Length: 551
Ligand code: G16
Image (cartoon, rainbow, N blue to C red; front, side, top):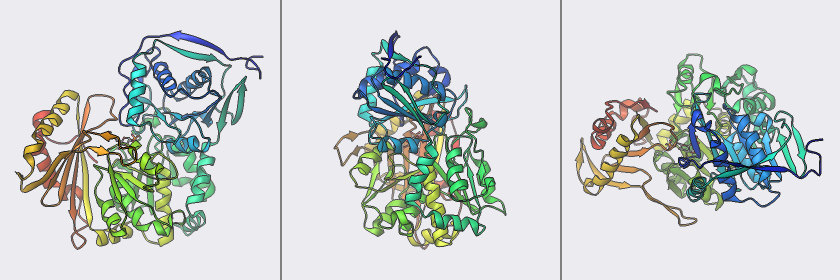
């Protein structure tokens, strides 16, 4: 019988040629599906990961994905390769589905040697979409830059990989499948994750809020969070089934671009602006780590969301003792800093990329962090966590009895409002965007003190981060320019795209507590946007007079 208990695993060595384009970006290796379908492409990268981390014999590995096209194929392949490398157990979710935060949680719980997550996050799926893979360390967090570079260097030298011959795997049958010394364990990811959420939030109170007739709409965009939302909102909180939209995970996300933002999820903005808008509207992305929060007539910008969470944390059972400190990525608005200042807490500023928060979380320096790119999280896991953020807001609404617009207005009256917008310029020729950044960088020393479209530059620099825990330095993490009128512009290139380049221009202007808070962000930032175009000579370099998207 194949795979009987004491059979030694049969391992083959397969010859291949190295690929030299497997350098991970902001969060893992992301490429078009057609790139991943080249002969041995995925195998080469997985072999590079396994050789670089060199897990001890018998170690456990968490392997899961967001359900996009190639997900199950990738999980079966990684399982066979892991077995060939002496891994003792691979743990995955039913159907190979694991949200990114759930995978991070499992890595920590199972004391695994790490995790391989098959996701391109918010990028589109399907055969013509994107695929991706990233390695998370035993702490549950994304590989630091040094490890990613080491994996890349190894990938450039791969000429063969190892594959164990196993009988057909059943990713849909919960439980253990044993093959000699190797075990595949399929677990119920949503149940494990929901239990943790029950320890952090007041489920009784949230269930009562729903019973009282308050309405919730959660849109899973046909991505990984559907089964998690069903377990939490419907089974454990008693929300009616119509609270969930697009809950069935599909390999092409049903055609959705699974990025919960005002452009790609415009239907949720329309729902929020409807006269009969639900009390809480929320969404997550492909792999479940991003979140979008809306209330009647209002989107809660992620920069504000993390600030409101900090200001109100004591209302929630899991966070009554507050946080040791907080952090945000550099391009994220300074709304969080304003609250931290009032509470006397340190507020760290990191480069873009969730991985930079992980050292701070591991060292206990922070307990809450967030990014403008619709990511918010805390110390329960080492990834940002979409459903956690939705539950935070749901619990806050239930605990205070207030509406989202009411909470936001009170917040701005206390701390002022940081009007904020990100303008993305997509260019096919990456060289043009790189040239813009290079020119701006060269002009930096001369900028301070200059007048630029109506305001004086007070500071202009290329952000360099020194990690306070391990002392490592990350240079050239975004060009930031501060102005005398308390506005700020940040320029950087996206590290998550799979074609051309995206120039991200982040605009921010502070309106004091006594000022006007109910205006439209685009209108309030029009002058700063014009200044950003002039200063960066955006049209000259990109040929674009207007951004491709305003987020
Ligand atoms: C990833 C990172 C985030 C980052 C985002 C956007 O998120 O984990 O930290 O903010 O990409 O990065 P970029 O501006 O370089 O495109 P995700 O949700 O895609 O894994």
